Length: 282
Ligand SMILES: Nc1ncnc2c1ncn2[C@@H]1O[C@H](COP(=O)(O)OP(=O)(O)O)[C@@H](O)[C@H]1O
Ligand SMILES: [Mg+2]
Image (cartoon, rainbow, N blue to C red):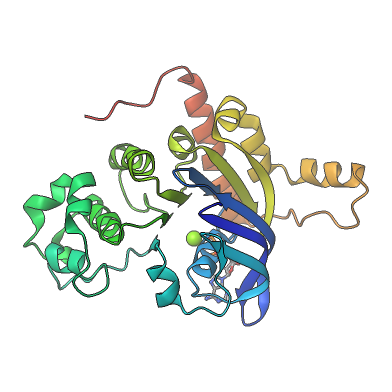
């Protein structure tokens, strides 16, 4: 039984789907990266798993049971933790208070947060609003750990953080998955970094799943990722070859091309240091 099974899922806003027929599986202790350009539907997917967005078609199974008809707070009690894009911290409250609020009354396991983010120990009495971006992200992830999740979803952990901070934080996710057996679904724009800690990856584009592969295969075949972000024509041609009636939509907005270009720049950059291992954790 997988921690998460998304089966033929469509979801969106006001009854209009923005993701269509999505399939994603996350096993226990597995890290799965959900990649794709801006507006692809990654956040929508995570919100739907959390019960905050409606399922329009298909199903989502958490730990083997469908979430259909269950309220968001009941879904999270079954062992799901979601660190949203905006981190959802209480800026006027201290770090300790934020950690205590992470779980149902009295049940927050703060030690679990400190085990993986020991730097929080010195910050316990500081207001969350006074923390640096990296410290806030540690707090958001630490708070998620206080419920001892069996599935952790992290949306754009690196947003606004310096790459060096991201390089330090991402390996902690690998440690959490390995040591606690928690499955992790990770949305991350630092694609090459995400692939160094992930087991598998999916690429969403315009609400359609355009690629699914092992992280290792994607690390060693970067053109696959580049074409999934950039190469609409290739997908269209492949679909035509297969005799598909309608190919996935492949027109990109200027903003998306922009973020795709930075992906290829990133890919090109990492290609030059392809053989070097990620920096070891201090
Ligand atoms: N609250 C909302 N109401 C209507 N449309 C939305 C809302 N949130 C996101 N969308 C649209 O859904 C699509 C997918 O968005 P999102 O899931 O946030 O993408 P990503 O996280 O991959 O950048 C986009 O076209 C976006 O404009
Ligand atoms: Mg998003």
